[in-house]
Image (cartoon, rainbow, N blue to C red; front, top):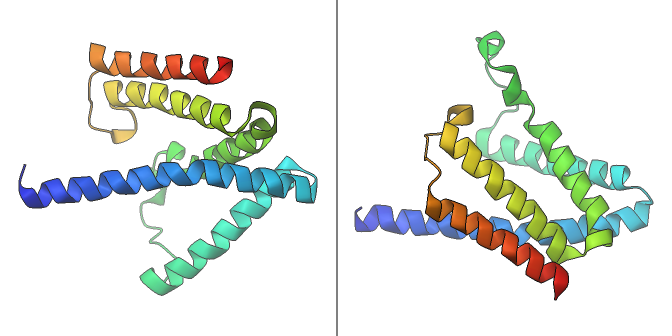
Length: 155
């Protein structure tokens, strides 16, 4: 690995860390929005509406377009269009869980779920991902996360 690619990797890792830092903030904000509007589903709708408006602006400024070529759309696998629905499930479940479990437990359970499915996706190369086989070190990492869930719940 060159110095340049090493620096790029560190930059992308930092972006991932910042993204992870934003998730509990988003969940806490959306949970407060739920109290304000009186519904987890309306709160989730508002969250996605604001995100949609922001992305519309970004697309118009950065890409200078909101369209994409329709040629070949029929050959695209159906599952590539499910990301938004999965986002709705994730955001809405976090809105519902945070008042019951607290921020730390809500986030750590979501993170453990993400790691478990990420290992499966990596192992089998689902969704076009380059396969990375599950090994004992990855399994130990997930087990340590599950120990973390226990510690957060009980202490």
